[in-house]
Length: 536
Image 1: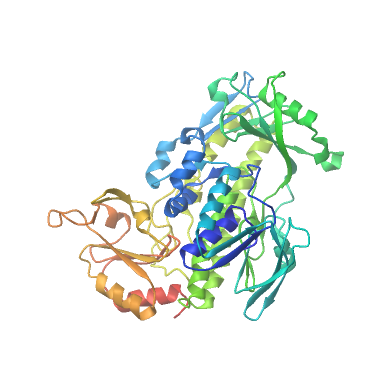
Image 2: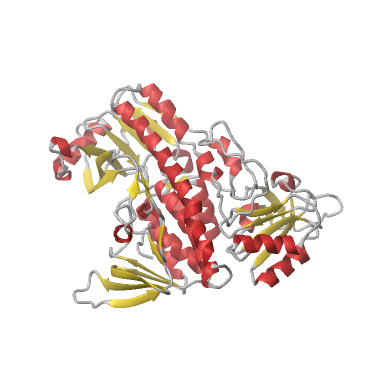
């Protein structure tokens, strides 16, 4: 992997979970010092739950009740400031966890520690890849230290290369892969500052505010205590540049945004960036795969970018592992772009929609009341986050229709239709309550009602193909099965199977195949596994 941000680290962690050795290089000497991304989506929190770090991330982040609050006004202190928040209760039943706010500089420290804790993962910061070539059997790359003069270069060979080197990806450029999308929305500058905003009413210290201050900006809470960030822009065609943001100018911008002209402010850092919404025309060049911002760059509105990238890694890692261990044919890797690019296109488009709401408010084309109503509604995006699905050769369709909610951005309809994320259902175990998602690991999982007859055929199919397969039986909790290890009166109905049905879940948590009923069949299951793994 090239790139030690959240996406590269996620790829390293996932490959280690699948038993694959990997090398990650990152040219910077350490993790991010700027909170570039903050919002962690429900789906990403589910992945963190599987890694055993969800509680740690929550402890390091902001209180969940502050996450969805958004405000608009002339300044944080102005009389026209309006605050609203999306309802957490509506979305809470859809997952054992929920979206969270933890700034990237804190999150990366956690992810790096987890990645480095795996013996199969070689993580090297202060190391750059200076050249690479595709070969008949993989990639040959040159890496060298960035902080040690004349440290010497090292030649490394790998079967595959994952490029997580950001929106200005040199690897993508080297491959000749272009990006498509509208022109950049603006040249932006983020200013992180330290200040005590205790003089403001508590409801003004929200996660995100859009302000018509001088200059117009967004204010983001970093820790909701003393660390904050403003995002504003400049126009190069009018002679503006990032150099205009001197310490004096940044302090003035912060005071205008807060609405307190004498506020003591310490500027912590200034970071220029380009606001854009683009997607690479391809996600692969031979043995090289693009992931994260190298494959798609979203606007920051909605907090989708980092999450979409982590799910790239989650999708790609199990496929690389299956091919590298000989479980799958190399054709499985073609499904990475087929599955992830449509999701990236939709995600980028939705982030652009969010950004245009802000732009119209700043231009006076939306009132503050209209803007806050639209922004609050768009803070709830579980339809996008949990409702996306894959259509590829690694999914065996069952002929059932895709759910079609009236608002596919906000509304998530749980379904175990092949291609969709396996739904969360609370089960009762001997140790207490457990989610269906907690039963999924880095291998394939077959879920089936107790006594369905699938256990032995599943063992035979797994042995026949040399695939690791976990079989989970779930009882309806009838009086005839009082001691069943896992029970739920609704699971089978929610997953769309009868008493003899079964659902095959891929290692990335998406349903690969479903049998609603009928006699258990080793041949049918082996055929499904073979199709998913490109072996049929």
